[in-house]
Length: 338
Ligand code: F6P
Image (cartoon, rainbow, N blue to C red; front, side, top):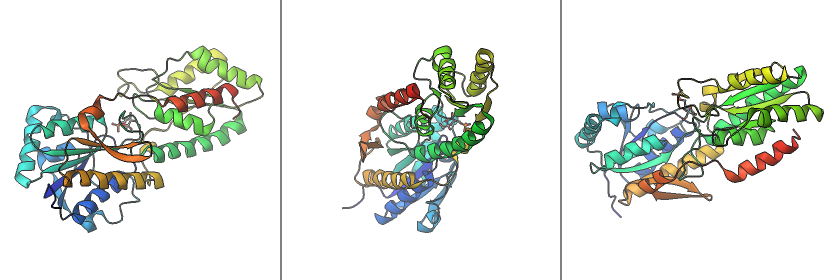
């Protein structure tokens, strides 16, 4: 069957995540397999606005499957939010003959896709963010690698906290979402986990938990704080959730916690097997959609399968914390057997 598109573009946008390169590779290889030309668009939507593009072939994606970051670079484009910026992006598509775009990123990236599709360009989104906060998909590329990076760091911290009988407060990324913190909290046997989606009370959810762990004989404590735990709208401008919690602990319990902000370390590193395979499957499915003449799709991971979902419907699904993981976490914290 002839492909519905002859030339497509691929870009990465928003915060990078391990596995984005694997997705780019899969897009390029699948397109070439169907005889479709691929243009790499650099620096997210800015690249489309400025014509910052590179022709991709099988060699241009060789040896990137195992590499963190994104060879296409990434950015958050203010200009693409404006009508003028979008017109320039459409003009680049027309000039270069780009009929379809695969955009790898988060919700913001998909909104950008929708704007382009109104100008007749076919679009498919692939979820790529360590936050795993995109409602329509159970999984976004990079989450598992980022979680494992955090877990490894926290295991190391636990060794030294145990030796010194200390309390550690660790800040985990996630923007306004607590999924990563929740998941990491389960995997590290945290004493307490604070996430933005659940109303928390410092005395009950932190101080009392440390107290009861101490009464049960523990002498070191691991508190995981999602960076958005204080639900501060200015979170990106006023970071410091872990420091705030540490000060509260000092004030309330008289112990002197050590603070570790894991930060961008969580975004780097080689993608693990789950991220390589998921990214490859998603990249493949995105191109299959465009080749089949589909547009406005988001490639989602649902119940263990990769499916494509209407983009407007996908964006209408709000973010939710994983409820079953939360129940498990509460039971584990209640017992505190770490
Ligand atoms: O969305 C991914 C993410 O890493 C968030 O967890 C974090 O809040 C944000 O990006 C950090 O953004 P920046 O790279 O601009 O510091």
